[in-house]
Length: 518
Image 1 (cartoon, one colour):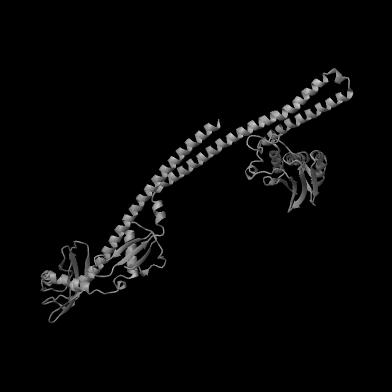
Image 2 (cartoon, rainbow, N blue to C red; image 1 turned 90 degrees about the horizontal axis):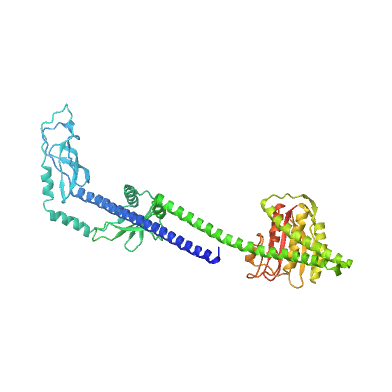
């Protein structure tokens, strides 16, 4: 798949994903706003109910104060019927009623009775009476009373006078708001009305005056709250100061979000699944593209690495066919040595590729024994020092490990160390300086190979231990190789329950550490 096709697929998928997420996000936002508006409407209804209840309580008080004692004329009533003689009832048109004890007095008798005041629409007050009970063994000869409806009608005949009294009280009203409605009364009314409207949230309240000063508040109320609901109490009081009820819900946002229900949760889950699938698909496409490039790189490098010894062997074979060379025993020996070396090199390259395939499948078994790592490193260094000297370089050996005994496969651990030394030599400058060192850290043995080479960028450090990955500039590789060396080192280190670590800075050299448990 070409790079252009991959980018077209990525762009199309990205546009589709962004569009889908935008639509879903818009839908959730709109649904949330709708639920928020519904909640705000409920709070408005709650405020109306609160004001209605407060006004009703004050109306009852005003009316009950205006209706005073009524007098009854009673003849021939046995004294033992006092206290249970009369009861006045009525059917309310607006559901508001008041029971009041009224003292009824005549020349010779005083009786306590219960009166039910019914406040009707149209600013009228109606009384009705019934005999509630009379002891069966007592004779009620007669009960005479002043026509109650007529009496009250007479008291309220002049509606102007009644209204004038109320207006005078409003004009002269100078009572403390705390006396009109205290904190506990207001809190209980708010709580009741919220429950009546099926709102069971924790809330905080405060009562403020017109200037914003707090009259009283609930213990946890914070004056810095911004997302609050506010309404004026006693809005019909034209001449009295304005007071405002402030209501705050700490859990309002969570409540509204939870009201989105199953569809909201399902939408969020689907968005997450789609984003995850998109990310995984994108990662897989780019990863496959990268692996394809690395595979082509590997094939090109392997072809070159194998072609060189094959060409050398082919040339040596042609030389052997030359009769002049065949007559010279030293030349024949030299040509045969070249063929042997190139054959060995070819076999090594093929074996390296085969070993990596075996390691990947996990089919290889290591022959682990107790090894003296200092001695192993010293032997490797003495052999490798010849290659360093050919480039006019220096190889320093420092054996600081006091405890150098590890359980390891000698062949593969040696190959891992050699790979690090070869990389240090390949990627070093004209006169390489390489330092190999062993030392102990805690309960581990560290084998360190440090060079003065070109260094490795931070980006390349993330991938250098991947199979077939090679550090390069653009599309031109600076050195030969399969890109298997460091991958092999990592596999060997992990097979010995250890790790491999790189410390490098671009243009300032690199240090590789094989860390093995003791």
